[in-house]
Image (cartoon, rainbow, N blue to C red; front, side, top):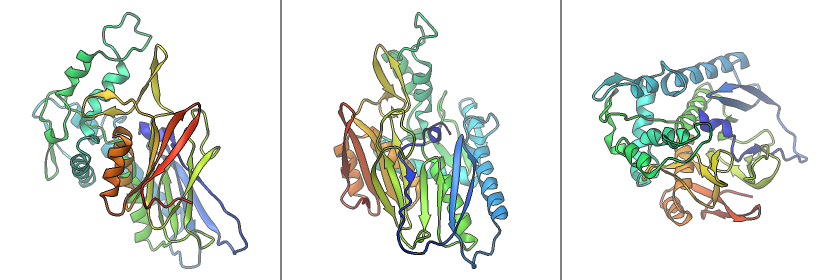
Length: 342
């Protein structure tokens, strides 16, 4: 997934002390255009072999890829996107659950998160249709934007059980801002079902943990300062402590298009089909599940800080951290009331 490639706002913090540290079993691999890293606190009670664990994880990754990758022409989502109006497709249980949860969050966020925004995303990637120089990107015109907006709207999604129907000509969906979080949750569930009680799952910077780390402490996750060109971990602005929680980060500072010296974010506001302009550089969300953290991190980049803070404070079990650009590579950190940062 495209967003996964950004690896936004995280790194692992190893804090050394005098306590004895238990050994860690580390597993890694490729997933959805990025990488995954699993850290399992090893003890004699782990009955499943590391090779078997990795095989199970890779199977989950492939299954989700076959359902929800817009880069696979035969995935379920690609087959739906290629349908004509009123065409229908039977989808898997997992894909169905992701769509239903997407609709739920679209309603909660007043449309600032919407998986039907894909036509507008493509519109901005392609740029102005009748520009003079095709090799020089220009932002789409207001007319280009308006023409795509009739295809967008979560209320236009028609899903009955596992049958997904294309209700509007040109309607397309993209679950890149939710499916990776779903994948983290599925890998997490797989490890927990197999009796593993202390571990961390990370895919492309999105994380979920269970139990304590090898030193018997909460898992500590660094949040990067959002400076273009930084590698993850080079400049940490805050450290979050996770206690059986998930965290996802989304930002607009590493992926943008530029025209006449003006930067255009890759994040599109589904409510108007336009690239967002905001001094919010990144948002990190802590939540019970990574799917929900993934969604909210995207939505809070679209919403103003004030509206986003009001939303987070209204949701039990959810916290957020905003990094706001105040100019000249200086940033202000703002948090919700219970954000678990050191």
